[in-house]
Image 1 (cartoon, each protein chain N blue to C red):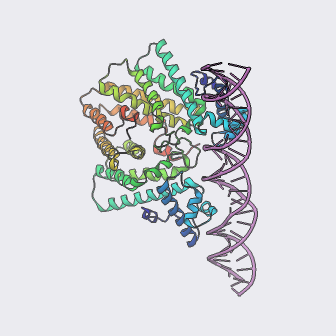
Image 2: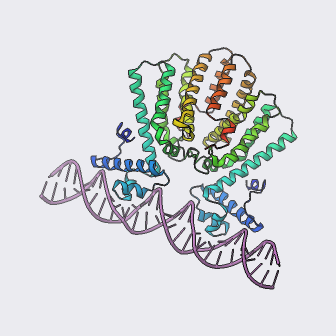
Image 3: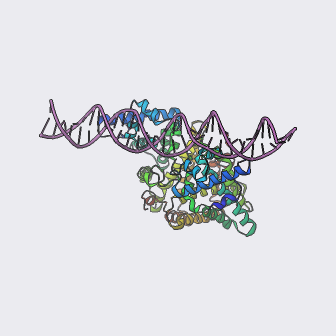
Length: 240
Length: 240
DNA sequence: TGCCATTTATGAACGCGTTCAACATTTCAC
DNA sequence: GTGAAATGTTGAACGCGTTCATAAATGGCA
């Protein structure tokens, strides 16, 4: 499971030795989090397991929760890698590409659903630096949304849909992650079926979007989201 | 703001004196939470402010976060009251009823958006008793969904939509609460406009739902949600 | 090599949430 | 009224996240 940490060097240390220590701490932390859960694992446990003093953990990570954040960054990096590779290798149509994006994300997170939950802890607190919807995580969110932008960029789509789709798909993906966490069905089939079904519906809706019957809905939805400042330009830049 | 605590007696104490103490603690806690924020307020602050020992706070509340839970229960009680009263008094059509449900909820929470955020803290951790989507809060969630069931019950609707609508509206309402928390526009107009617009769309979609063009979509959506066990019977009962 | 700035590492100390054994008060059956 | 059970109250103590003054190690330059 830990190989993903090497996908991109997640590294803020200045020296080689610092990198190593940081990595040791991250490795110990994730192992303990997986074994005994996030809350049951203490920073002292982590430091001891990594063979360093308590303070060292805080030298490399601002706090316990930021270790999870580092993990999630590594997950996103691996996700981007997988997708870049797949896009370069295979020929896929839109639906296949979106399926790949969604499925590969779930595959990466499959055994870490409990860790994932911690990401959502400050979702209701805009000012918290780890709020998964707040300005503190805007950059990470932008990257996540961009994955969907790339997945649809070769498609012939009207401009408004090109703006709407990535954020909608990202939202679907966030919802899927929540369901994934709660999903107790074997291999989380419930979540996987829902994602496939939702993408299927999305495809059908896309081809239907030009129908004159639905035209007013489409522009109305766009107007609504624009007014609510829920479209990408606003979600990823904090204007406060 | 505190009058809502009296709407229904939120009370687990056995004696009159116990009720009083519990109420004092809750009152102090909410005042301090509002003044200095949830995290900046300590249990010792609360106990001191209420004029009791630290342990007393824990006698009446299992933990700090459960004080917020008690607050939110009072909010829901007031919401139900407002709605019962309005439904009994005025004649409203479906859209007006739904607007009333949504708007009155936002009105009640208007000045407590920061407190509200704490409710979402364990949304990603199914096993936590305060997980706002987990089994620990199923009862509260059922009541919340039931408000929407009541708001549509007089409407002539096909059975499947009657099952789908309440949970969808509740989800919309949850989403609105999140947006509400993040909404920095004056009087949170962004959220209010979005809610109104979303309800408007919902009404139009409802009248369109019978159109043969959309029929396959409707049954597909229902099938999807049923498979994902996202319809009320499953959301509110934990089968684990 | 010796010197100093930078980086890395230490662990005691602090504040807070929570627990709990002990004590005080109230309730109520007799 | 009296005793005992139920209810309410206390604050010391514990464990944990986090901070910080201090020390050690490292790297580069003379």
